[in-house]
Image (cartoon, rainbow, N blue to C red; front, side, top):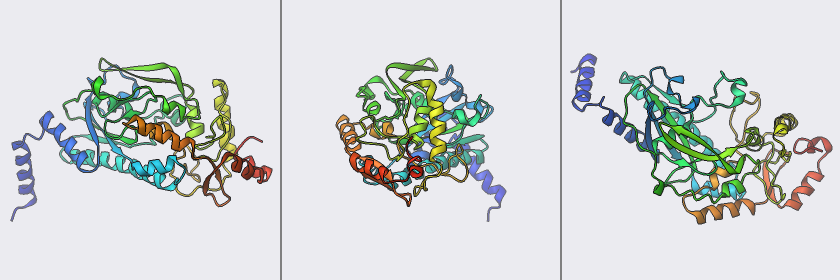
Length: 370
């Protein structure tokens, strides 16, 4: 019977025989490991292919001595997305979205822990909700420790659509991205070639956004390892905080909304957005709790955040006709209001106006400026 030392020697001899520390073999292993447990796309970038990028591409921020990163994407349920956009079901997509986010975090930790057991220092980067504290506003600047998006486009997992979301060849932007940073030397994969990118600037992502975050004409460019990538220029990021945070969401024509029952205005003037966000957050705190949701470190521990938007991400599908169908589902799905038990309900614009009119002034102030 083998003792533990003999078993360890046997495993190490097999690894050596298969040249498991070879960059090509390690890269192939990472792809196999992640696709076997749910990834639809996997790529690799290195400190060289990320050279010249912004601070969120500095792999050593999370792991001193890091050389490479594995980027991957996991799809969300497409049918649940369509019911969410149509205002037929909020809970199903929200639960799936939260589940996939935690699944991605677990997958990243799984590969990192596997390599650490093989004496390869590695770190699994959380899918979402982890921010740097060494910026002027600390966590509330919402600067990620590592940008999954930049790693994904440089490694060929996807490319930037007009919105700045990463669009994958298989599932469009309806994915959650993950990353594993490691000291191992891996083989970098190339960005997708032009003919494999299908973003045609249809701008349905822009049309589905009630925050005004994206600029219709100007673009932002980033250089990663000598390769240029671009997407629409962002306006004040707190515009997205207002809408994706669930404090606002009513379209300008008032005929449709996100899943947020909030109706606070998103100012046209950039300098007024910050104050509008603070006002909306304070006013909305007494609202009844929406079923489901998740804990977000930027909120008080007593409160949860809900998935109410992400329309620009969920609209984007490989097929343009499907994008159009999803946009129609969104804009024909009505306006969302909140009932006294916390549940959300979609109805026509006129019905929503009557719903709010029936509230007391104190109740109504939780949803709009009165």
